[in-house]
Length: 342
View 1: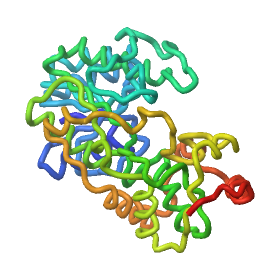
View 2 (view 1 turned 120 degrees about the vertical axis):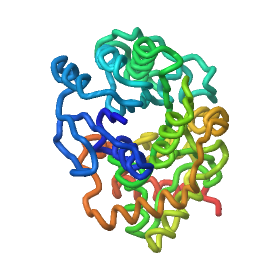
View 3 (view 1 turned 180 degrees about the vertical axis):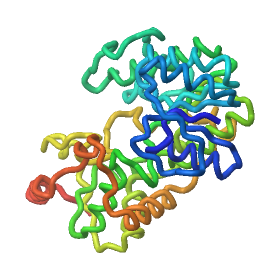
């Protein structure tokens, strides 16, 4: 197996899972970080440099390639075309953001995806408030590029939503764990009964390998089952894992919005749109997706945080989490309103 990337979050899980399953693994990346050392065959190079990609292709063949680092359609098209003669199948790590109606409406694999040509450059697409993003357009174009180079029978498109677990660099679950571990009154968003469906990175990796071994192709939504977990359960799992003395004040959505709390970032995983956590995964489950309980994801992420100290130096992590001052401000306003229940 060839893994494009392979040293960060999803890529690391793909490599680890493949090694555990007995695969011989080659990684292709710039070599800025490499936790696997002797376990894999590393090939150093930059996927944006044609000469590096050409050199990579001469190192094949491989049964499969898993692309965890493709973000620009034109580049994915060039890389996929170079590898098509020496690779059996191409698994592209995409996102639910490719859907035109995410996060506004519930989704299936039959839902409309954003249009982006397979040879588009990095400037294609625009961000719209509460709607399609340039990231979604770009990933949709990358999917088209993978299919153009490998054909629909040799290309597998995985569309996860939120991915959690050990080594998460965005910092959504680590932020909640750190905040709950600090104790005190914790601002909890909306209702504890709100359902959520994040997928564990290890389950995503296992499904990618399962799709390869079973010869599955096409697009798959890769999320935990709808209605399988709740926000209240997530925070309870955080309290159990950290053994903290936190108490949760559940503040209604409308109050949080009136106080200017940013969805998705200041309170990670909180978003009010109907489609955020209504992504149908029946197709993937039928094809072999198995998702562990969210409590195990929380437990193992906390264990990783305790063992490793600093959990992320990625620039995206800086966007995550509400300040303690703003948290106290929102809670004080909520308590002063006299509308608090429970």
